[in-house]
Length: 264
Image 1 (tube, rainbow, N blue to C red):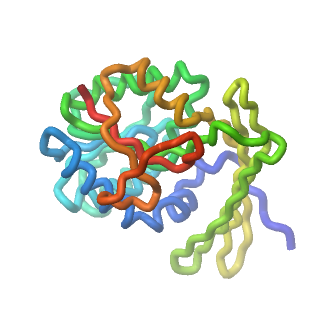
Image 2: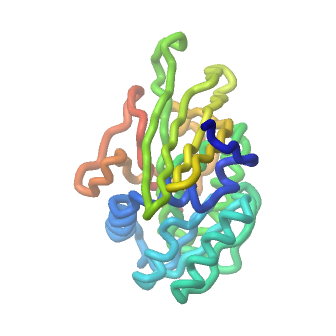
């Protein structure tokens, strides 16, 4: 029997999104705390996550004594985040907002954006606006930690292809996720990616399909972006192994990078 097709985009189904992106959280979480301790010029107690989605780290940071807040355009994801915080006795600190146009009432010690959400900002002018907003939101000496997938500078466009698949399970719910390249324009730096969830319970099979648009960056292009927002200084780079004792040197072939930026 074919699956039941659900309408909307992947972000409209926070229960499934949170399972896929929130189940393997420990390494990133521990790494972030080590980054704060190693690289910040000030004690880190107040955290902000732009494009926070379901807030997969919110309850963990709150349980460890941090104050945390964040914003997202999708009200369903924000509600999911706040409902979980409420269930666990923490303040409902996520809110609906635009990561390219926001102001905070009280500044934060650090911000983070770890799963490529930054690349939704197209064209680059939107990314600059976001970085300027974050600069206003973070105290001097504080950090912005950003996980980003880069495009290699030298590759054959005819051979360019992205395809990934992974799964997660919680109780009787399992979600198989697949992602594939649809198009890539090196000149406009625009990439379209197909995304699908296959959702299984003991009695049902459902499917969500979506197309996402990403802004593309090479290592050189990301450094060029940073020059447009001089409030941020690049202090270190890591890969997705999340090893605080093993920073990397980014070259033209590097693809997965965690950039540690300091507010100056």
